[in-house]
Each structure stands twice: as structure tokens, then as C-alpha cells.
Length: 383
Image (cartoon, rainbow, N blue to C red; front, side, top):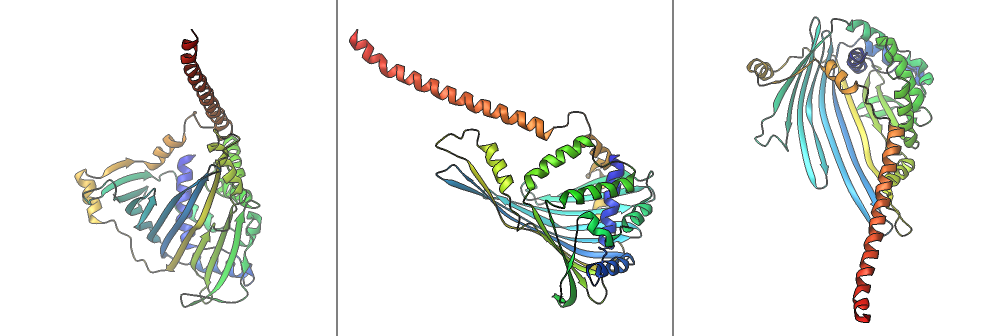
């Protein structure tokens, strides 16, 4: 099941990069033309950027501490359909607790007759002190899958029926200038009212692609439990569609209007095992900016090739062999010792609280012991 899922995700990813949304000059007209014109494209170049500027404020009723988390990512991506191939090149920077880390990365995914070969180069500023990164390689068998069939099926989504997915796009009343290109602006919002529907429809799509269920009953229960703490989540989505070619040229997504009160209270309860009448733990997650931007252009990639240095690293044995990635995924996600988030976490929370109570008992015992020690000299004098 998981092998089929991985291949479906890969195919969906490549296809979605090359076949945008579908709906119209009402929202439905623009989306349908966008889908039709995108489907004719054989390749695409894009830039993918992420900005995460988040602070976690933790208070105890008297003082408040703030933990800042900064993450930025910038990647250039190229993709072709025939042959199906992807190249990625860029970097990600992470900063928290006054420490910074930069990861430079290249990745090439090339399909052969019956294989998907993946080449990954990574240079980590915190571990690769000599400034030299390393290559990794994997080869995944595709002999049980028809990639073209998967691509065709994923491209057959009726975007005019996106309302069934809980997605209702609105079309801006006026054209929008996006970096010199006159565009239609399509917008929608994903929140707690439609997120479950979107997930359910995505499950159905994966089942159509793979013939297997994405989530079993236990997985669904766990997901529902986790989503209950994201009640105020709001994901704002904007598509900029070239008014002349009806091709999407940019995509923006952010979570900046989310109300995380429920999640804040949940985290405060986790951290508040030692709360008493004098101290009450509070948590506040501040989303200064949590966004993703994606720009694209079409039919401008001739061929994706693997760098010679990657091939040399494999030939010399310097590249780490990751094996079949789907087999690794089976090992990571398989097994019978899955963690039940709702029941097991509740048990852990009880244990944590019991430990806290024991700590209080120990503190009381210590106070009693101190009192006894103070009284001992007086008893000696009376004697």
C-alpha cells in the first residue's frame, strides 16, 4: 500500500506542477481554462519560497518568556513530463535560541524504464565544517506502476466541482498586476469548516490512484483528534492566473489570520502540571508570518540531467546508498507499536501529573524535615 502511495504522491506532485487548478470568468470559468491550457505544457520552471517567523510566549503569571523561531527556504525547481523528471536546487535557514543553521540542497529525480532514481546533495553548516557536503542515492522500482496512468488520472480532477471538496474560489472583480503581468486573482480559504472535507476527498483521490486506503480507522481517529486542536486554523490561498494565456503564474498561501486559542490552551495544559493557586501557565503562539510563495513559467526546460559529480560519487562509493525509498517508508510507518495520540498521550499526561504531585509531596516532606530540625535545638535546651 505504502509503495503505491509514494508513487501516487510523486506523480501527483509532478502533474500538479504542470496542470494547475480548474474553474472560470466566474471562478469556475478561469479555473477550467487554466486547467486546459496547463495540461498542454511539457515542462515548467518555478521558484518556491517559505517564510516562518513565529514566537512562542510562555508565562507563569508573573513573567513571560519568548522563544523565536525563524525559518526561510528558497528553492528553484524544474520539471518535465516526458521523461518524468524533477530537479531542485536551493537552501533553507533555521534560527532559534540564538543559533542558526543553513542547509544547502540539490535533488534530482529521474525516471528510467522501470525505476525512479533519486540523487540528493546536502551541505549542513553545523555538521559539514569543512564546507564539503555529500551525495546520497536511491533507486526505487516502478515495475508495478503505470506512471502515465497515474498522471492522467490525477489530471482528470473536475476542478469545476471543487465546492464538493469544500473549496469555494472567489474571482477578484478587477484584474491584478503581478510583476507586470495582468492576472485574474482567484482566492479561497481553508479552515476548520472545510479542512475535514478536503482531507476526505484527498483520501478518495489517493484510493482511486492506488486502489488502497490512505488512512485506516485508527489513523482517521488520530487525525480527527489532532485536528480538534486546530479549530481556529485559517489558510488563505491566492492564485494569480495570466489573463492572456490562462496559465497560473503565482501562488500564495499563509496562515497569518489563524486563531490558535485552542492550541494555546492545549499546550498550556501540557506545561501546567506544576500549576497551583499562585502560578498559572499560559502559552501564546504569535504568527508574525507563516507563508509560502510559488512562481512558475512554462515550456522552458529542455532536459534535466544529473551532475557528473553525483555520478562520480556513486561510482567511487562515496555516495550513501539509501536503497529503495518505499521500503524505507514501510519500515518507518509499519509495525504494530503505533502511538495512540489520544489514549497514550492522556496516560502520559496523567503520569506527568502524578510525578508533579510526587514532587509536591517531596517538597512537603522537606518542609516537615526542616521544621523538625528547627525544633530539635529547643528540645535539647528543655532537656
